[in-house]
Length: 621
Image 1 (cartoon, helix red, strand yellow):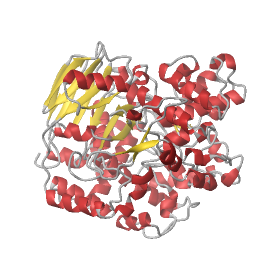
Image 2 (cartoon, helix red, strand yellow):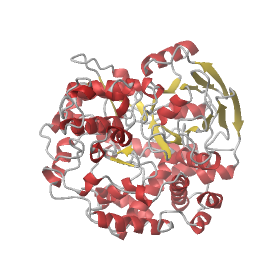
Image 3 (cartoon, rainbow, N blue to C red):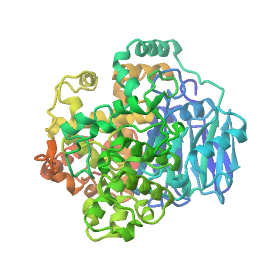
Image 4 (tube, rainbow, N blue to C red):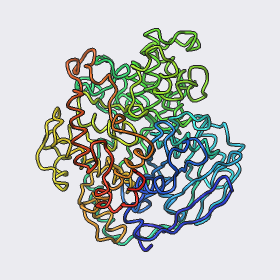
């Protein structure tokens, strides 16, 4: 492998304590790229159908991409994938920071974990070598203590650690994998898979910078970004969450379990308020000048340690407005607990909001909550319940299963308050307002996701983002409320490119257009690639993820939204607006047809042949 990759994938059999190295050929790398593409390939190729996601037969994959570790802004991400314990379907999440670059510098493009260790272990990867080490002394410790001990034990404070906290160890189904204490591979429960394997952490350190085909071109592109700060200064100044009041006015902010539209003190949760009151700085990912990640410090009434970063928009909304909470310090404390315990902030906040609505409707009582008054707006109760989920204590043990399973266990009509798609809780963006976003939630292979999705406002007018889409053939704006074929086409093209980002492991917030990103891939790998080829890679991986779910028993009935979104909010901007189920059903059929899937959403043999993955066809019956 000449450029962009190391040509080595580490395979770790935890059951047999055996480590080996695979060396895929060039075609494999170009066909599946990295990240989510590697995850889709190995899950389809090597995982038996219908295995227990928390059993030893599941595989856990950490993967980088072709640009990871190069000196270009936006490349500081890695992917984590497995069969999801939350949805029992395709599971994959991405995370920023430095860990992915360190893995590439250590000589590997990916790690595949198989089996289950007899007792807690961690993997130590360094400069082309790897060893399984005892983690009995780390088990039960939060992420901060575990990282400190690992670095002291190995004698290097620059070691990068991907790990789980007590939430992952206790198999909270939406536990995440935490990099460097504050960067999360948040969705689909990858931390629970890690915990099920008795794998506490993966520590990496490398000193070898990989070769790229055209280092000067990468430098030229990096200079362009640095010299155009207006395109990313918003992120540098505030990170995400800088428009909370505007989101209330537009109806986009989830409020009280996606039920209401009024939230009078949204400014209390705004990133501007964070900057003015409790921020002590901003941090960055590898080789990125943007520095978009908040760092906060609080001493009272809760102590919030800045080593755990600070809340971004999804945390501010999920732990804040969606729980009816406008206490910024409480939200920061809950965000810190999530990072200490390795919990996905979206699923955690949504699950607490679900419990609050059950409590207010007398489905849950003080006896079941352990005396915690779980009313919407009770900041103390929200923080207490997040802690209980991380420890699986009392009601927290039930809520640790996610809203779908929790509702089934609680019964008494709780199901109507469980806001999820395929078992995964819904992110902090309103499908009542953005119709393609809602369809994107419904058809997503991982359950509701806002990142590999289309936010309708981006194609509703000739804005800077829309102008970039001309390279994909999207030439005319489509109104926000439209859910016809033109909107579905835009969704498909944008999602395919998002999935490509998840495979290249490049950040979606940086202002690279499609031509520039193609140039980055060419410069890193030396391939004569094009926007067309890279788009087809995204489509290939989207279709493979779909094939995995079909094999696991998912049907078109699973491509649907919660009942709540078919009714307006109780107040505010969306009090007379809802998703039309008839239009959604028609758009779903249009999506299947445009994707080359049959009327049940099953990829056709012809489409699999066209995408150069004909080997998948026999798995679909």
